[in-house]
Length: 257
Image (tube, rainbow, N blue to C red; front, side, top):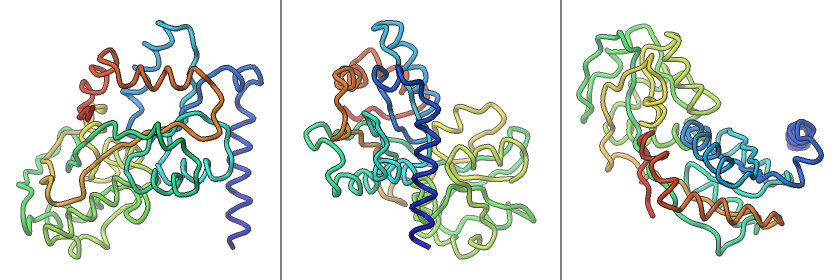
């Protein structure tokens, strides 16, 4: 089974590499970023390319999937994880440059519904989430591996309602897919980052989970140890600069630097 998983991972990595033109592989800054960063980071990338003329290629996925690609040896320059654990995972294998690691962004998790939903809940101890779901399901990112799912499960456990909805959870590969389930009306409620909710006008925020109900949400970033692209460090400096800050704040991120 382990061997089959490794083969599948190498096949996925090879497929991603084959999509990169030869000249792009040597000149572009390649970024591996958590799926929840897409809207903000796309805007930052466009501004960076206009300013510098340097191209960026960004691969978005759940943080664990990106970490496994890094382990498989994918040639990339920068990793931005949605939680500390997966950055620790690759750092422990000496796959990132320690001095470049930086706690970059913060976020919140929220309960969402379709924009026309009449669900009205106050998120607190023992709140009536199961009743609000009715016959529907609660859309969440994978609760065992994906940061948004783990934060959501931790919050529901802390509030004493996880046991009542555990058998009604529709687990998605990443947080954007969980968002899509609610946006398309396939799930009446979902738990996503505030920034995801802000990116989709077909959903509305029912309420935010108390910060103390789950571990702090931190997005660390670091250059990969294998990167030899000098433009990568320049892009990191741009991400930390006042010029990039508004793009992240517009989407609801908390800029930690």
